[in-house]
Structure formats: structure tokens, C-alpha cells
Image (cartoon, rainbow, N blue to C red; front, top):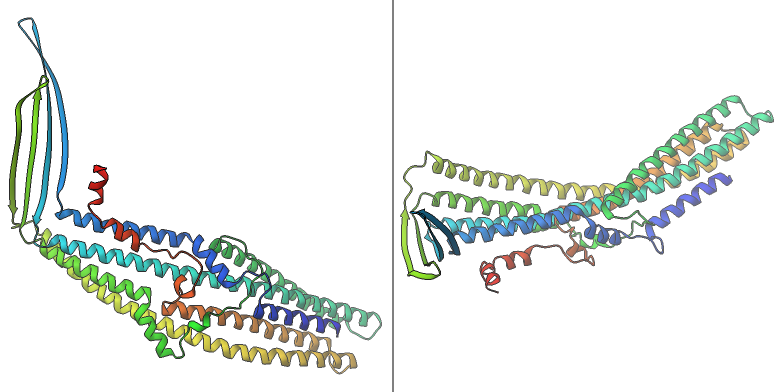
Length: 451
């Protein structure tokens, strides 16, 4: 009887800690905050977005002037008739080159680069969601792993007590060797299950540390993010269609592909450039030619390029079609993820209710079976089976509660709302928008040289 009450009270304490959280525990919000600042994947996505922004500058440069200054010098000598003649020359100049018309190819390339930068920005949000969802999964795996370890440790203690009880009854002639053997077998199974849960917990804690950057403290499944979930599935789908990063990435990819197609078609048109230079030459320390300069222009019209231009257009058009097909696939995947996560929450709720009923019934059955065993109307095997069923029900409750939390955050992720901004995390949101705006100032390079 004492062992049963220890088991029930221990399990109740575990569930209470899971529901209310420890006084100084590590909350889900704290873990998400730490992971957001720590995650290498997010930092990598941010750097990728900044690198993409530089493509805008490179595209703009195609129609902006290229200005350069040069200084050149030479020293010469000759030996004629026994006399050595020497000379020196210094040449300075400024050159100017600019494409003034390229059939709007540069404008298309700029639009393509901007779409790619926008895509990279949304990729940060997508990576952010993946990281935060992985943190929640790792967090709940550690929490449920600890609960399972404690439960199976308690279960092992119960079987140890039953083995001792069976052995005591055998010693006084009230039991059988079968009872002892059955208790020994169940104890071995309980020990194996306990060891397996310890190993699984170690793996979960290692995953948690990799994602969060620190070992887990006292954890709690308590959170208030369910308030972000809309009241209906249709509303959740509507939010996902409007704001999920993967869908926004697909839209940006379509824009980039369309601009790429425009740029490829523009390659068939004429190109006009102007160039000029101004310079001076000094010989033996004095100017000889004064200032000199030139100004020219060139118009080029492509006629035939070995099929390269036509192939480029066809390839760009195919990429545009592919981007639209990929967008449709992404839309379907997001929709599927929302429906799956929504169903996961409903299923978890039903499993929690069923598991709670099973635990309550299992406690009653175990208590009655122990009493019947003491009166001789039930066997040790009956007690062992009742305990195994109760343990299974308790494990089911732990798993159902874990899945409920994971399904909740999975739905937020599927809706596109598992972001630092939506969750209100106390972090500086990672974004390349300001960086993109700053590098689009293409004259900054010239001002830097002047300064």
C-alpha cells in the first residue's frame, strides 16, 4: 500500500510541476530568447541576406559612371657615340566611362536583385521559425524525458517492493516461486525501461544545449502563446496564406524570375556607351604637351551570338514558370502544415482526457488488486499487470501533454507567427532591411574616397 501511494504522489508532483512551473525555472520564453541570440542558422541567414543586398549595388553600377585616375612614369637611357642620354616621363590622366542605354537591361537586373534581397530577408524569418520550433521540441523532449525518468524510477521501486514482498511470502510459506519469478521479470523490464529513458534524456539535453547554448535548468510547459491561435481553422489558413515566410519567399522568387526574364530579353537590344579622358605629360621635369583629352561614344547592336542570347531567354522563361509552380507547391505545403497542426492540437486534447481517465481508473484498479492480493483473491501477477497498465497510462498522459505543446507551436509556425516579434521575445530582431537601405546609396563609395 505504501509503495502505491508513493507512486501516485510522485506522479502528481511531476504533473503539477509541468502545469505550473518551478519558481525559478527556465521558461519556454527564456529558452526561445537564448536560442534566438545563439542560433548559428539565424546568423548565417542574416549574413546571406546582407550579401544579397550587395547584388543591388552591383546591378546599379552597370549604368553609373566609372571614374578613374592614373599616374604612370618611365625612365629611359641610351648610349650613342660614347655618350649616355637619359630621359624621364610622367603621365597623369582622368578617365570616364558610362553606359547610357542598354535596352533597360540594367533596370531589370536591379529589380531582380531587389527581389532576391527581399527573398533573403524572408528566409531569415523562415529560418527563425524553424529554429524556434526546434527549440520548443527540444525543450519539451527534455521536460517529458525527465518526467519519464522519474516515473520509471518510481515504477522500478514498485517492482522492487513487490519482489521483496513475494520473496517474504515465499519464505513464510504463503507464496510461490512463480510469484517471485514473475516479480523478478517485471523488475528487469522496469530496469531496462528506466535505463532507456536515461539515455534518451541525455540525448535530448544535448540537443537542447546545442540549440539554446546552455544546459537545461528546471523546465515548465506553461506558456501563454496559445492566445495567438485564431478561433477557427479557416482563420488560421487565412493568416498562413498572407504572412507565412515560405509563401512570401515564393512570391519574391516569382518577382526575381520575371525580372530575370526581362533582363534576358533586353539583351537583344542596343547598347550605347560614352567614354572620355583628360591627361597631361611631363618630360624631364617639365610639361611638353600640356593638357590633352578625348570624348567618344559607341553603339552596339547584337546580331548573332552563337545562340547564347536565345538560350538565355528560354532559360529565364523556364525559370519563371518553375518559380510559379514552386509557389503553388509551397502554398499547398503550408496549407497542409496548418491543417496537420490544427488536427494535432485536437488529437492531443482528446488523448489528454483519455489518459487522465485511464490514470484515475488505473489507480483505483491497482489499489483494489493489491487489497485482493493481500486477501488471497488475486495473484502477484495481477498486481504487476495493474501496475504496468497504470504506468502505461501515465506515460500516455505525459506524451499527450508534450504533443499538445508541440502542436500548438507547430500551428504558430505553420501560420507564420512563430517569430520573435509575434512572440514578443525581448531580443533585437535580426533583419537586413537597414543594411540594404544603406548599401543602396551607390555614391557612398565616391564620398568615402573624397574624404
